[in-house]
Length: 384
Image 1 (cartoon, rainbow, N blue to C red):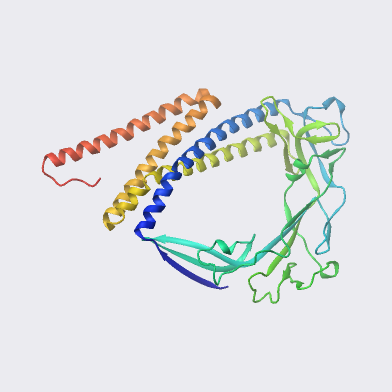
Image 2: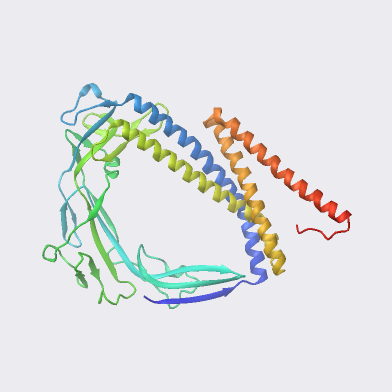
């Protein structure tokens, strides 16, 4: 493993220019946060409502035969998922039964990380194994840290053309949901290894001269297979095919889990996943909003940074104010989204937002009054 570093220093003009550019981008982050939060709330409600309705409508169906009376309805089916044939990775001659075959490729390459403090940035360069090729042309210091521009054997994904569960065939979108892959044990006598490739003892294909001393551009390749086995499905029955079910509010239901699971369990899991995703996107929206609001104060922070102590104090104050404004803005945006998505819960949330705004204004006015009182009494002013 190789390691190198490179340090740059930001001039006052560069810092101010960057902060002005950030301020111009601030509306983009704020608007983007608003769009994300509105979409997230409406999508979460639609999904939750469709799952609630689907849990009441779903009917049990046997995988042994197609029941025409279930045509077009939401059904729950369990059985063994079986592909129509073997899967093959032709470049290495890998052939195996299964639903999916994934070629995972790690590349030994240069990576860049940066650390900024005291108006200087240190760029660290390190060689390591990593999936996906990093473009070294985008490095701050590409010279001496060049990665290859192409990969001889990129990662690939092979999926069975048809997968059946008893008398039913699965829509490709449902096949995509079948997970739980495991490394495939490879044997050299059953492989077709290209020139420059060798099979390591652990079953990994190595492309390069010396696995003990890897060079930039060397590859480690593993094959993973998703095997056939029991699955549980909640989807629409269309003829002998299981596909996504469109609920009355337009949301789609297409659930699949490994093993034999009840419909009630699957809907409960889907509701939990929907709630987790909703909170993750809420957190992302909060962070994006904070970045936008904080960027507005960027030029002021850059100017204050010319005075070392004042700059640190000012930046601390800016972070606090930006955070408080973000909290208020986040509640307002989510509350506004709920006016259409969840009207019964929107009013309490908007009340919280209003109270937060009032509290923030009260704190600022109280601080201003305290400063005026200290100045009137001849005391030195407190920091802004």
